[in-house]
Image (tube, rainbow, N blue to C red; front, side, top):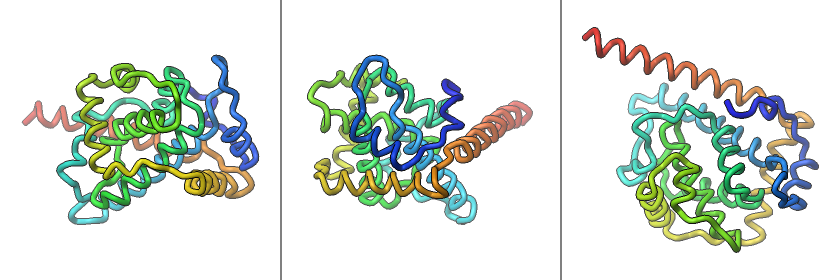
Amino acid sequence: MESSSSSALTISPRKLRTDLYSYSYQEDSNTPLVISVLASLIERTMVRNERIAKNSPRGLSRYLRTGVFDCHETPDMTIQSYLERIFRYTRAGPSVYVVAYVYIDRFCQINPGFRISASNVHRLLITTIMVASKYVEDMNYRNSYYARVGGLTTNEMNELEVEFLFLMGFKLHVNVSVFESYCSHLEREVSIGGGYHIEKTLRCAEEIKSQQIVERRYNRIARVTL
């Protein structure tokens, strides 16, 4: 875990809105609040998808083309830590993460057989954030830089970008009303109970991660003994 202070973070809708629209782009700027909210939303989606996979005899359906986002081995990094790493090395502002959130939602709608999981979430995030940054920002890093930040090779990053664009049907435009609606959705998320407590969801994600590590170790031992 790269950051522990954010796991106990309580965010109010007013704080989030101020951060989204009045963020200070400085070298020593704090991590945007939207990162914690986005991490929590994605973690909850993954938990829900895991539940669906266990309760469904067919599990989660897979599309051959969206399989490009699957990792052979799940990265040992939480969503929060991964997003914080991307921010630390790219300094992408809050609007980039909102647009990336739009892209993720749009991607799942266009490709209904795709489900966000521990095996594909990291590649999906680095790809959507890179594409969103190119859409929002005037100046951007090269794909090779994003690849290093995301723990990929340049060829992998290029392939993910191309596949993502085609799977999206190149529907990348986000107008002001759409942007506002997703900001409002994020605000509604943090308004639950007078302030959204990030800690509970991230703790749940940590428990799932620990369980997955134990299962992988058990599978390795089982393969050896067999």
